[in-house]
Length: 571
Image (cartoon, rainbow, N blue to C red; front, side, top):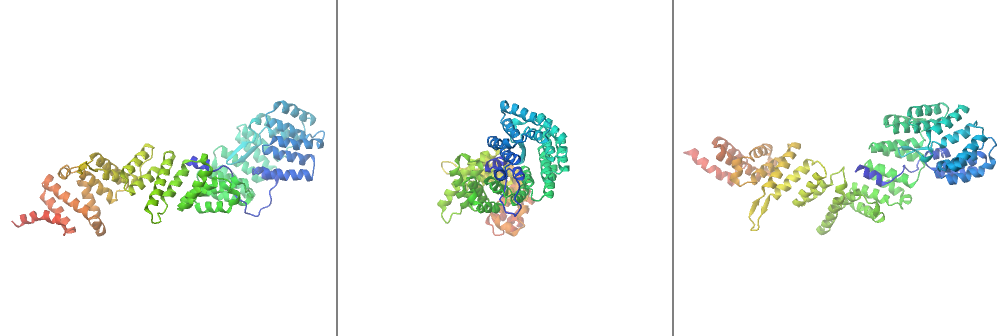
């Protein structure tokens, strides 16, 4: 249920701010997805230093943040400052309509600014071309346009090529061209353009990250990792590369690496958004670093307190840390605060927590906790495709001697496509063996041969998986013995090879011999009777008898069997 966990835990990037690093500029903040901070920085600059460029930059910040209406307000403020041949803010207004798919307003305004600039101003052409890319933005392991409806790769390439002809050394144009070619499904040319941006002086970290994103989308993860690491080598404080590495490793289930890179992202990004803090905790949970998961949430409690997901993550972590009371408290709080977001894993961890609760000397309270634990596991079991929760349920029922329920749980596991492991097979065999002994209404013993057959079948599979486990062999022998009357069982010989094997496994080990004394005596008696009734081989009969007596000289049954043999020998 692996999809399950990641999709419902939370959505976002990662981290908390710890390291002392220089404050990022607006462009870097936008590349981090921290548009609110970028907008504040650009707004302040426009107010303190009003100019054609600062007003455009302020509007551009809102545009990149997906707020074209707010962007238009700033562009309109800047229009009076535009130069006659450089209608930069007027271009910004036209672009706001373009990204809103409002062709009626966008087309004439775009035509007007191109006319005013005579189609020769590289910056105007660049801004229009970039808008037709929809502003590709990386994050969470993807690279997608902010405005999908505005995307027109052909128009973007046309405008950007015209811009590049007039400003051959502009690295930003080359970067945008790379985006346009990527959208045109030409990743090779996209990478070439990104490399051109690098040669022209574009920040190496940003370029390598972009190339890494392209390789990621092409599923060439090794080259993606290589380029993200190049971005970090070029600038150890370039946070987006850490974020993308974290997400990439998360995608391929390498959670320890994901947690490591998300921590490094945290340390350089100063990103304290709630979704970021949750993402960091999630990655550490998946990396099975449960104590760090709990610590991260506790240290950011003020920022996270209002989000119910916090209680889920911490509850799951406490369950895994074997702190059941804290797990129960947190998971139940989550379910109370967000009942509509409940998922099967909530009940899995809650069930395990209830089963792990200590009784504090009260059997009745323990029984209640256990009952709640099983009920919650059974809620989750049908939906969990990665963990066989029916096995957990069966283990509990087997341990508490509720054998019909144990068998039913393991039957459900099989119906849901889970392959039984050796322990499941052993429990299934033993529960069926126990259920083979029934009593009729008069209290008379009735052998359930079907149950004994199911027991032997399951134990045979368990024996293949663990051939040296003596109890499996013993109960194969007993299942084949007790399925019939004593004489029938001896004459058909089905139990014979297993009794022989069991003796060979434990009889020569004093501790095991004492542990299985009754079973060994039964085995010797069976083999003695078999050779007496079936093979008529007195030598074999006496060999088993003498071997039994050598181990258990005080056993009355063996001694009684030996009496006729002794008298016969003296005649």
